[in-house]
Amino acid sequence: MSDTAAQAGAAPAKGAALASPWLIAVLVALAAFMEVLDTTIANVVLPYIAGGMGVSDDEASWVVTTYLVANAVSLTASPFLARRLSAARPSS
Image (cartoon, rainbow, N blue to C red; front, side, top):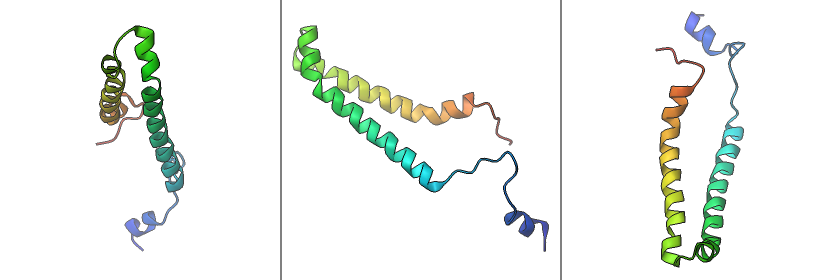
């Protein structure tokens, strides 16, 4: 048996983390649910924001627009920031 074949069936290294596909699926589903919930809450409170600030509904809708833009920016920037700020440096 070659080294490569032996390593393929070998147990993970002592420090390696095991990520369950079900755990990942649940976490992604939870994050998606929270995004929808946050957007729904922002849309529901829009009339109260408009009334409290004394602005029209059109002007208050910028709250939701700004939230969605900030969410898109942070979502696309998170992989870069994770690689840049992580404690473990990937081996090249």
